[in-house]
Image 1 (cartoon, helix red, strand yellow):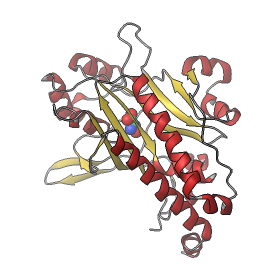
Image 2 (cartoon, rainbow, N blue to C red):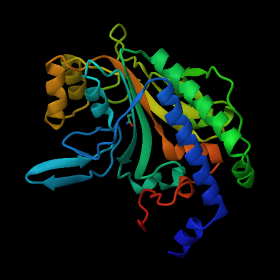
Image 3 (cartoon, rainbow, N blue to C red):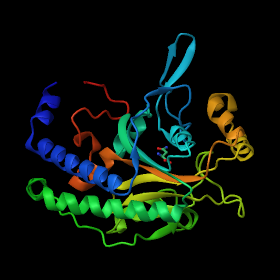
Image 4 (cartoon, rainbow, N blue to C red):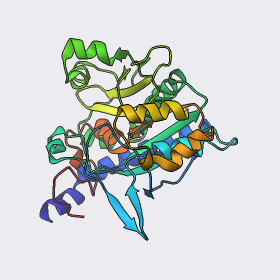
Length: 306
Ligand code: ASN
């Protein structure tokens, strides 16, 4: 409790919260300007993101039904675009991922965090990546304009990136730097950059003309701050989704309503991604430990105080 109170009452925490508030307002303004419709988050559902790494499950039994706490709204994003009248959506979405304790020391993992989750119907990765670069530049610019005193208090030197952000293929980077390529590149970069073509979840689109190539991307912060956003073009066809689930050993029964919509031809091509809110604040404020960026942050394996 002492440690929590000290964090809660600190000047630095107040400065970080003001910067977070300014950044979120800048993001909402940008979305509004481009006609992206805000949805409210889904916290509980029979389906959620399978994720490509293992976490403890967070399920709740309710009147004989098994419901999962949201790991990400990826499938709900695709489903919301079934409407012929909606083509661009976003949500500030809380996600629960009960990560293993080993991840506590990365400085960037929480078990309860929020992401700005975005999806555009009928768009490809080029358009989505361009939009993301603009929102990132606009947000940093706004924080610099509005939060000079707070940045100074935190001794953070922040610059608006010039862009366009560089793009690196994950396989080439793996050969050059080995498994830790993302972090190695992050440390040697001074502007945010993209990693493309990452083997990941069944919903990330595989290039039909080039099997094994993924039309997805991660946006990575410079100065060693690591991943900012992950996303991709999506697969939407029933047969393709079924094949990819099978390849990953995932049971179609766990995604039944989503697959039913795919089978009916209701899902549509789209591209999107999710920008982690706490990671954004971590970068903007130059805070190395993500546990310090918010009031109620929960790191993997640590006792939850509040
Ligand atoms: N939000 C991410 C996406 O749109 C998915 C995730 O967070 N796992 O691709």
